[in-house]
Length: 340
Image (spheres, rainbow, N blue to C red):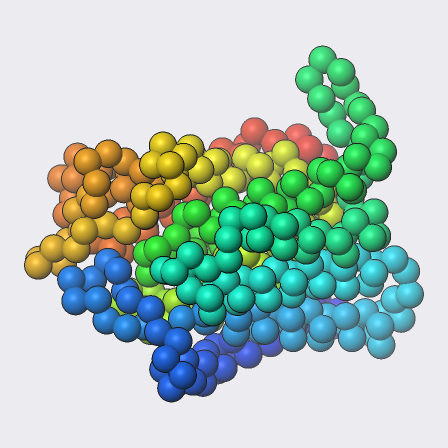
């Protein structure tokens, strides 16, 4: 009975996102919130900032889960405080992302300084409840208690790092949502296996919203996510790792994003992830060098004799992410499976 009820928040997150997305698409077209589909030869205008609806579906699902804990489980412990802090941070990140979207990424959006400050401030709800564990294991030093350094420094840096890096790997139809589904699915599994089933449900609520969003975001996309999605999903991943105390494996899952940051720095953060669309529907490299994983995916597909298309480039990155997840689960298996 309880297990059936716990599925409801996940289903509700999916349904809300699935059925409200067409409404957002129509409204975005009416007000001119439209962006170019850059990997198409004829860049058609596509509705933007659809990620805010995915976040809405997630929020409603979490509120249903909270009501279940309050009215059915009579939950009065500190768990609700942690859930509400998580929800507050995700909403702050979604709002910051939406502001950035409305200001227009093609015109610079928020300045880098403003963006970093605002994203760091989104960590305040977690700092306020002293989230996570300040004890960390360091090579040669063993277990070290960071005390106030953890909530005041490590938590903001973690959220800032996850949010900004997750936003780097983007620009192809379905890429951001699919990556979120893979990583959140893996993190939800880790949360469940380490005794944080409540955190697993939260991760699965966002995963369900992203699945619904992906229905409209796959090639050819009728909606783009925008920073309202990438900020909130990237931030949620960091928050789950902090609250579940599995930061190490979360960082491992983020290896593709760490590589992406390195490639973007190679291009001095000005080279874009887009490809160069061709008349036959394929995509060629936009630059002479590789400045992102999307470029690397195009290059690898060509090397193995496969015509690179937008879908195949995205699928290639998804496959890479899945492999990273599987390797991470194997490497960290002792810490993950020790309770079962």
